[in-house]
Length: 307
Image: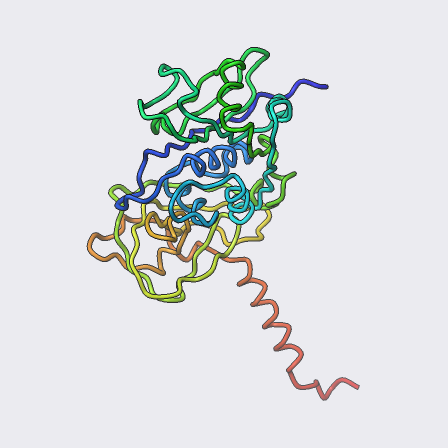
């Protein structure tokens, strides 16, 4: 088998970081799920708290304690990524060696205290793992905090941890999003410019929401939310709404979605200057204009000069 290229490793998600200003349910499964999505898309999927919460919501979780099956649903719904459930020691280790990034369950207390980030450890935990070398796997613990770079874990330590969780995992092949569904993700770049502190805005029922890969359902009622970043979405194949002039929602059930600057109104603090909102374009608009021109041509009266 040819040697695999080095795995992509972006910043890792922390379950300790809260989306301002809410104190929402945080979850190690959603945090590790964001990490494997980030690894699978070469960094396209962001690993911040707002995106973690959006994935959790899309997975159907409302109280914490998400299952791997629920995470599988969320990854498919939000990014079009088809994660695979893997069970058994040999299958899990083979997947890691073959280039998969995994979310792996284990009882946290199965790890020595020096490998844990808190004393309380009598619970089922989920962490990110991928390949390292013949002696180690690489892992990132969502309890490590927002600045962790991950670390090596000896294979025998990993086996003890994974065994305590029943050798259960969910995986995506690293840096190969184009082969796993979600064809837009491999051609999409999302650039964010943080707004700090986050700003409270109001919106009307019908306000359109967007993801990096297309339209989402519109807001069902008037409401308020916080926005924490200016966003530019670059789309190589011009199939989804893209451009600059987007804002990222960071609170409530729509956390992680994008809205147009022009579609919201600051409640107290003005939004910082940003690019012209009109630059956020939807390729559907161009299609509509072409159809309208074709319809107008068909409806035009016949030229009497023609036989």
